[in-house]
Amino acid sequence: NAGVTQTPKFRVLKTGQSMTLLCAQDMNHEYMYWYRQDPGMGLRLIHYSVGEGTTAKGEVPDGYNVSRLKKQNFLLGLESAAPSQTSVYFCASRATSGRGYEQYFGPGTRLTVT
Amino acid sequence: GDSVTQMEGPVTLSEEAFLTINCTYTATGYPSLFWYVQYPGEGLQLLLKATKADDKGSNKGFEATYRKETTSFHLEKGSVQVSDSAVYFCALRMDSSYKLIFGSGTRLLVRP
Image (tube, rainbow over the protein chains, first blue to last red):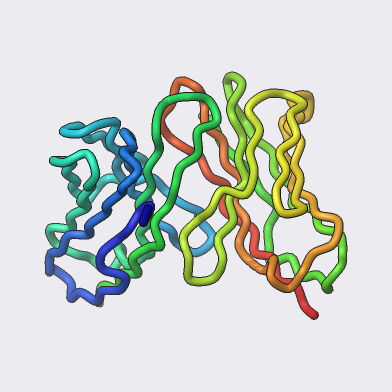
């Protein structure tokens, strides 16, 4: 099992450019999440999905869109990148709604917007 | 709303010292509690968890006890190693929620 993988690992964008971050999991998990991590702020939830074809907003959804067309993939899109979106982005997945089930995290994507 | 508060870092210790990282939470019910660890350049990994009051989670020499009366889940280790240098995140999740709520993280640096 590869677990949770993210593509790409690093990216530099100019302001106004667009890009898509790909998250893939091979654990047949229902729930998937996108977080951003900024210094001193921990992880903040951007969007999440509770199953194929579903998406929902998290704490900081503005400027991002997501899609979950296949159960194993969760895409995060930036339509018009801004310097405030410079961050490290983590994807995570979880099996079910049972108490105590953990989230599994990908290795992260470091994005710089200039 | 529900929240997690962790002690500010960085925490700098010598090898074999005793570690405590404080974590307290605010929640309207009885959450599950987690400690995640992030090594440099990597994603987060679950370190330990507890799902009900008085449960003790343990892994790799780390322990944390779910204290309902003090709404705390402090992380402890009796003798830290250089390889424990990382950022540690406390988190909670309510049964009714799909989401983890994270603290801001505490950086631990262990010197030889």
